[in-house]
Length: 467
Ligand SMILES: [Zn+2]
Image 1 (cartoon, helix red, strand yellow):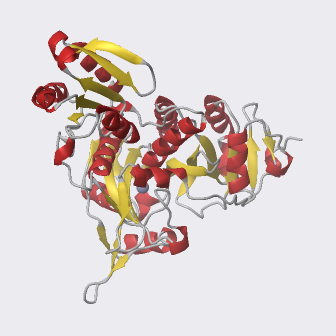
Image 2 (image 1 turned 180 degrees about the vertical axis):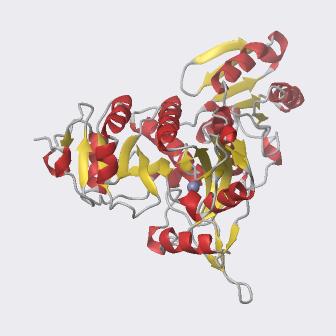
Image 3 (image 1 turned 60 degrees about the vertical axis):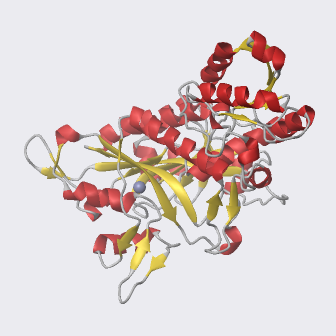
C-alpha cells in the first residue's frame, strides 16, 4: 500500500515510483533486479560473499595500475597504459563540464585547520581526514575540492550577472578510509574527483540548474551504455515542500528511486542524489553525485551583489558528473567483464583502448613500412603501434588479442603493394579497407571523445616490462 506524505519521517527509507506513490522498501514489489540490489545493499545491508572483483583482475592483467608499497594503502601507481587511460578520463570529464559552461581551476591540496570555516567543515564532514602536521601547525589534505574553490570564490567580488558561475577541477582527493574497506578502484585513500561547483542566486534557480545537471549525468551514462539507479537523500520537509519537483525528477528518470530521509539541518545540503552503477556481480557502486547546498556560502562567507546592491549568499550545487575517475574506470572494466559473461570478447571502448590499432609485419622487411604507416595513422590523433618482435604472426595476433587491441592488421607484401588491408575487428568480422578507410572507421568510433598519443614506444620490441 502506498503511503501519504504525512507518514514520512527522518532516518527512514522509502521507494518512490513514477506515479508518485511512496512505499516502504519491505512492502515494495520489485520488477528490476538491479534496483533491487541497490535497495538490498543500502537498506537491508545485505552483504553478498564475492571473490576478487573482476575489475581488479582486469586492472592487473592489462597493466593499468599497481598498489604502491612505499606509501599508505589505497594509493595506486598507474603504469603507462593506466596513466593514458586516466588522462583520457580526466579529459572527458573536463570536456563535459566545459561544454556545460564550467571553467577549470587548480587549487591547493592542503588546508589550514586553524581557519574557522575549514575547522568547522572538517569537524562536521571530515570524519576520515588525512592530517599533515609540520611543526606546531595542523593541515588537512583535501577530501574534495570544496575548500579551494570556496576560498577562491570568497576572495572575488561576484555580481548577480556572474551567476550561475561554474568552476571545475580534477581534484586529487585524500580520505583516510578504514584499511579493511580499501579495495580495488572502488575505495581508495587517494583518488581523483572531477569536482564541480555552481553558484546560483536562490533555491528556485538552483532547482532548474540541478535538473539540467541531473539530465546531463543520465545522458553521459547512456553514452557508455550503462544505467544509473538513484538514491535521493533529503529531509522530509524538503520532500513535502518540493513534492512536484521531486516527482518531475523521478519521471525524467522513468523508474523508481530509493529515498533516504535525513534529519533537517543535519547536513549542508537539502537534497543529495547518489547515482549507483550496478557491476557484474550485482554490487551497487556510488559514482556520480549532485547536491543542493544552502549552508556553505554562509560558512565560507561567499556572497554576490544583487540588482539592488545588496550582498546575498548564493546557493551552491556540488556535483561530480562522472564520480571519481577511479570509479569511472571501474565502470568501464566491469562493462568489459559483462561482455565476457555474455560470451563476447571483453574490450574497452575504442577511445579508451591504449592501443587502438596493432600492425603485425609478416617479416623483418615489412617493419619499416609498418612503422611509417602507424605514424601516418597516429597523425590523426589515433594510437597505432607495431609488433615487430621475432615471433610467429599467429603468436603476435594472439598477444594483441590478450591485450584487447580492437583492430589487428597483418602487413605483408600484398597489403603494401595493393594498399588494401584485412582488419580483424575485435567485436566484429574482418573487413577489407584501404588506409583512408581504416582511419575514417576508427575516427568515427572515437567520435567526440578525447584523443591522446601512445604513452609508450611505437615498436613493441622497444617496450620495457612495465608496458
Ligand atoms: Zn563540493
